[in-house]
Amino acid sequence: MSEKKLVFSGVQPTGNLHLGNYLGALKNFVSLQKNMDCIYCVVDLHAITTFQNPKELKNNILETTASFLATGLDPNKSIIFNQSSVSAHSELAWIFNCVSRVGWLNRMTQFKDKAGSDKEKASVGLYIYPNLMAADILLYKATHVPVGADQKQHLELSRDIAQKFNNDFNCKGFFPLPEPLILKNISRVMSLRDGTKKMSKSEESDYSRINLKDSADEIVKKIKKAKSDSESIPDNLKSLEKKPEALNLLNIYSEVSKINLEKALKEMAGKEYSFIKSKLADLLVSEISPVGKEINKLMNDKAYLLQILKKGTEKASIKAEENLKNVREKVGLI
Image (cartoon, rainbow, N blue to C red):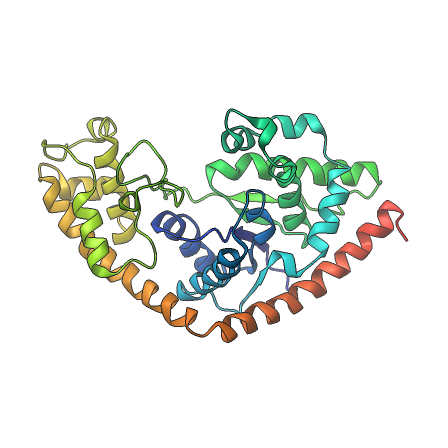
């Protein structure tokens, strides 16, 4: 590796990557690969913490890979592979299961959110998957991890595990304490049907999100049907914040047009929702439609996608095995 910082991030292959994934993660991945060493992983082991149809999972792994490539990730610059193809992830996760503390995992709010009211029926994998996430990152001794607000707590756990391992096995500095890369300018992309909820592939209504594979017509239709009200767009941020749906549309417009929110608000203040929806639909068609076409094109050549993953696995395995060998020695495993 060069002396550049090392970035690691992963995306779950659960289908239907959407505008929120694109603005909040994928575009950032492409930008980071210009100046840093980057490892991008399709985290299929994380996906199975809740049951996945095996046939759909295989297809989703390839579709997530296609989405990586369609948005601009270059396999010659970044390592792209699927998590389960490098068994070192699972082995290091088990070691970390023995380093991490139950009390730490009990504080993970995302488990409580995902498990719902009946935690007894949640899988053990869902409970301990933050330890696997720590293994994903620390296996490559990543220095930086691009994270959203909902994953920051898990990164803090990764730092705790790294520090405890270094202390327990008297190897100060062996694992770096990874730093979060949080994009200051990107706001969370919210549902088009409810501006108080994050845009999600799990939401029942397909009209709540712009999928990366949506056609131009579908994008226009969804933006037109996005929740709004009869009043015009306010002329100040304080009033805008009281209108979550308007704020969401303005935020998306701001991100895609590459202008700050204040400038976007100045442009849209006093206008009807139909005005911003028309402008936003045109922007999204221009930005997202080519991505969707490229994903569909790549999905018609699954052999190529498998080849990309295989080459990425070979590169990742070399780094993973070298680091895991040192971990085994530190722990005392033969």
